[in-house]
Structures are given as structure tokens and as C-alpha cells.
Image (cartoon, rainbow, N blue to C red):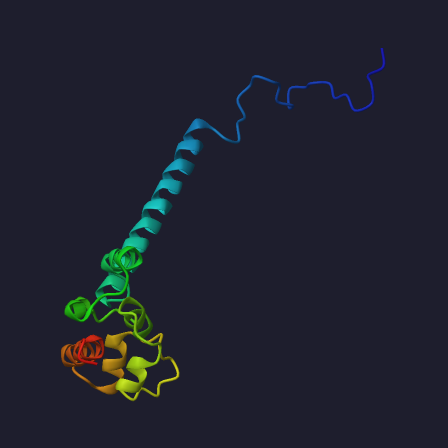
Length: 151
């Protein structure tokens, strides 16, 4: 009988069905899983480290999300709520949460930086050599004055 084309007769060197593949043993599978777990743990640690660095620099905050949700539900903040201003906030964000005109703070503080309104309050204060707390207090006062009913 002549074998059909493409048919390979099993020999001693050809692995047959049901035999374990000698190239990938249970031990090498466990090693591969251990390496994968180690890489994932390292990536998670780097993620946590990066997040902590961003929080330390006041570039991200859980409070930003809660403020955004508050403003979305309740409308702009009022003059009595200027104490909620934080150094990580951008001028754009401050204008938005208090319902101010987009160029209000630019005009009030004579800001000429082309990055306005995407600058953080702390970043602008540091750039100009201002004390962060004093600058934040000045922004709070300007916003409160603009929103006060006497205007």
C-alpha cells in the first residue's frame, strides 16, 4: 500500500499524540508564570510610585473629581466657597467652577504667559517667585470680589 501524499509515518523521533511536549514542561510553565507575575508586580509598583509623585506635586487629586461632580450637579460655586481653591487647580478650572469669564483671572493678575489658562495656580506662583499661599489667597480674594453681590 502506498501512503497518500502529505502522510508522514510516525517514527521514534516524531512525537505522537498524547505524549507530553518535551520543549515545554510543567516546570518551565511555572517559571514563565513566575516571571509574568514578577513583571506585573513591578509594573504595579511603578504605577503606584508615579501616582504618588503626581499627588505630591499637586497635579492630580481625588478632590478634583468630587469638585467636578459637585459643580456639574449644583452649578457654579459662590463667593463664600473660594476656600475650596487649591494649588493644583488650573486657571481654566477655577474660571469654570466659579462660572467666571475665561479671561477674568488673566486680566485680574496681568498674566501674559501663553500657557494661560492651562497653568496651575502653584505653577504660576512658582514661575513668578510668588509665595504659593499668598498667591492662592490673592486669587481667592479676586474671585470673591468678582462674585460678591455688590458688583
